[in-house]
Every structure is written in structure tokens, then in C-alpha cells.
Image (cartoon, rainbow, N blue to C red; front, top):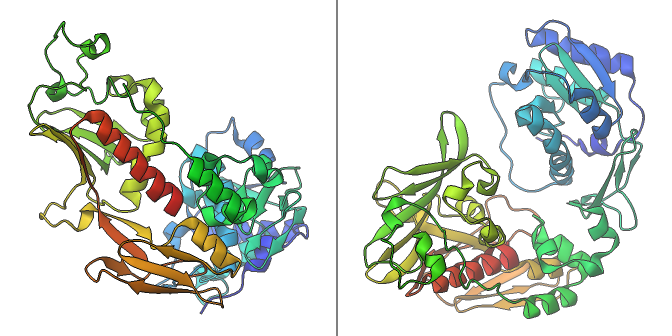
Length: 446
């Protein structure tokens, strides 16, 4: 049973501050906290200004909930899209202070339920827009000044879809949060601009499928010649100085190797309760741990050449770890051959060594959105749209694994699983295949 909370996100009536004050004080009391200092703000810009010099400790209402059972739902509703849009906005502010759970935003599966926690949460959701909660202090956002929505969520084609009372503006198309210049001038978007969005099919719909396909056909793989001359400076990869090697190779960082095997693994992990990405050598004790972008790390220069950052962005190893290869990635050299594979699980199974993608690319989903005929054919299957905007799949190769998307919802297609296993007899050849795979898989399909 899910309750309609869409109206909470699109409501532009100013809040009743006395009602909001009582609701938040009662919720703090229920959670065992003293009455907080309640600060009302008119939008994200004002909130950021009011908190920049404060030392705040998070208070999470979720830690004190009395709910004994949860309802699991699958699918993507208008509520989900609007909530995700707002979370993309407020994540920018919450991460400065700590954790996502600092802010309280309406959940349709908890709204107006019988539990005491839900009753307090509902009172806060009904009387405010969003709250950021800390020990001793809470910030209550007033509702926006303007909100423009369609049946998919926040949407406007000629201006902002959301304007807060402090003047902060946000732009959106069919529920996708957009940069202002992209929404107002889509013809000047690059292929990288389009692929930077999570719901690419919506952006492709904005720029036009035919225009996007022209851009796709004219895209050229960036040159990888001479790249990563300092790639992965692990001791096991360092070779002795050789005056006959090209000058840049004498950095002893690889590219022309002795015929000795090595292997580097990349995987998500937690170290000292910090979540990040670990780069580890197989034949040494060297471990490099990055909580965020390695190129923002103080010790990135031990492993990477700054000039290689653009290629790293194209490779998007985090996307590979997130959308498959649960065990991690393995890059290595053996018997004169460079290779990149998915890492098997600790029990030896290969389930974590597969990538997944939806069975058709983003442009196909854009046509589905418009209920236009479309067809995508590969060696293993063919996907076509039906007149009602849905899809039909004919599978030629019964050995490939195709499963339904667990979340369902509009424009969601079944998942196709395939092994990550690329090889080359040159380092540059491996980089070229990696870059091409990432562009087609994470860019065109993602």
C-alpha cells in the first residue's frame, strides 16, 4: 500500500511556520532529543550560507523509528522520480555535513501509516518541504515559489522547473535534473554532455534521436598512444633502467615490460569504516586506497599521470564495479599478453566477473518514450517496440543470460549479462579496447 505524496513535492503554498515548528519539536521529543533550535530557510542557497561556519553533528530520525515491518516495492513511480530529482539537489548540501540521512524527505510507503514514527514523519512532511536535522539544530525548508511538473515529474522546456523562495533555480526535463545551458540550448550539447546524465534516453529525446545518432556515428576514440607511461607505479611492474628504451619509458613505469607476470586488482571496499576504491598489487604489499576521485587524492601521482585523467573518465571503472563485476576488476600481463577481466568471487565462482546492460541502447528507450517504432539487433537477440510503446525480444542465442529488470517501471528493459574479458598483445591495444567497451557499454547503453 503506497500513498500519494506527489503533491508534497509540487506544493507551492508557503508553509505555516507555527505548525511546522510544533511538528519538528514533537519529532525530536519522540526521538529522545531535547527541543532543537529551529531555523527556517527559503531555499538551498540560504541554507548553504547559514551552515557554512557551523559545526553540526547529525541527528538521524531513522535511528529511532519503531517500524517492525517494511513494504518492498518495485517500479518507478512519479513520486520516485520527483524524490530522486530532489535528492540529486540536496545531496550536494548533505554530503558537506556528513550523511544522506541528515535530511528527511517524504517516502510514499511510510506516509500516513499507523506506526508512531510514521505519524511524526507525516506531520513534518505535511508542514514543510524538507528538513536537515542535527543535534540541537534543525533547518526547515519553505516550499518552492514555483514548480512545473508533468506526468513524469519535474519538467519545463523553456525555463526552470523549480524555483525556491531564495531565488535558487533548477532545470529539468521529463523528471531528469538538467544543467541550465543544456536544457535551453540542447543543439550545442556534445556526446559527452549527453552521456553524463543518468537517464540518457530522456536527454536523447530532448536533443532528438536522429541528431544523437549522427553524433554517435561521428564519435572517434581518443588516442591512447603513449598514454599511461606512469600507469600503476607498483614495484612489481617496474623494470630496470635500459638506455635503449624511449626516453619516457625510462621512468620505469611500464609500457615496455620484461616478460614477467603481474596483476593489479581494483575493487570497492571499506578501510577503517571509510568506503572507497582499492588498487592492490598481486605480488607486493602495496595498496592504494581512494575515498573519491583518485586524481583529487594527495598521492595520485604515485599511480597516475595527471594527463591521463580524461581517459580515466572515459573508462569509468566505478561504473564497471557498480553495474557488474561485483568482485572487482583485474588488469595484468602474462605470457606476452595484456588482459583485463572481472574478478571472480572468493569461492572461485565467476558470477561477479560479468557486466550487465539493458538489452537495447539509450536511443531505443528514447523511441519507446515517444511510442515510435524501433529495432535493435545484435548477434544474440533482436529487440523491437510494440505499438503501445512496450518491447518484444527474440533471443537467437539461448546460452546468453537475459533476465528481467528487477525494478521494472517505464522504459526499463531486461538485463543482458556478458563476461568482461579483453586481451591484447600491446598495452595501447588493451587501453583502446577498454575505452571502446566503456564508451559503448556505459555511454551508449547506460
